[in-house]
Length: 123
Image: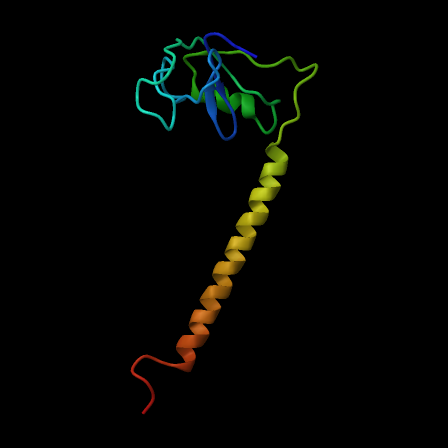
């Protein structure tokens, strides 16, 4: 759905509502397509800011705070799409926990190896 003059800010991306391409959320106009050379945007001037998700965990407040210079215009609360935030948080926390456990196991292996073969060797 096209949203003229609108900056769409989501959990993992931002885009121009007019052309649908990625956008730098700090710019006044769609001057930059992220990942492309500067000037690759469509030039649309932002007047509104919104998100594709329902107001989960204060998302609307964070979007408003990110761009207080733009008028916040959010979806109707009658039929908002489901927010993936809760699932993503659970997935991210599980991945973080797994990463921490792997780091701890690697540290333990390293410490065990050092204890078996101390620097300078045994005499």
